[in-house]
Length: 330
Image 1 (cartoon, rainbow, N blue to C red):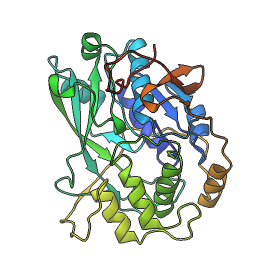
Image 2 (cartoon, rainbow, N blue to C red):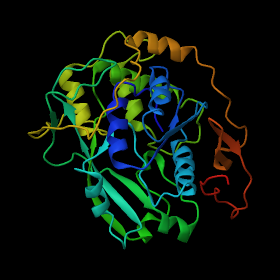
Image 3 (cartoon, rainbow, N blue to C red):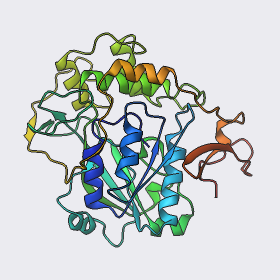
């Protein structure tokens, strides 16, 4: 599930095309050119995308629906990723070698990167390499799931951010290595990420404590992100990127290492993203969001219909006093 990632999308899609049999995407009403890029990319790679029109932070339900869709299409493994995440593998064969036969789930370890080259708002530039901490600031993980696990347990409930899944602790796991993560590329990109990311979650009143805390923290740092006129100083952006999703809080970051980093591919001949960040904020302010269901959020499910990923309220029996588990509507 992505929102306003036009600057990095050509590299992300090129990287995925080199590794995976197909890519499924839900776009959360992007206004920076992401949707136009996705439409054009379908002519270059096996890519299917849906529009998610609700003003709700329900990434877990959307990704769970996409995972179920991937298994219905015959996938043996599914790798939920954000558009700023790149599996650090040399080739497709390298990735396949890490999927050990006895494993039900794979675990990626986040490695945050900071681009050494100056970045434009609408175009991510990899020339100049990347900077990373020698050891991760946090122990953030991302999960990949196997068909064997799906067939044994039924539809899988993927957690927010794809950092886990229901029952993960009970299944055999394999270490997949680094997942290179480029969360901050420029000052305006960070302002859009924080401001419009928070705005896109405004209808959710049931979020658990700590959900999207990094977006709210960045909002506070940036001030008026609904109509920003300034961005964070370069060194503060760098610290935010390397320590993401946590703030350094005055603690000095350790020395870094430099990486000659490149994606495995990059799609060309794609539409350019919107170059003016003020226009992106204006487009977002004019969006017509689809209303979320009136039912309690515990009963929400995501249905993929045509080109839309829609929230629906579905009644399911569950134990009294306990919320119905998240899942996917068949």
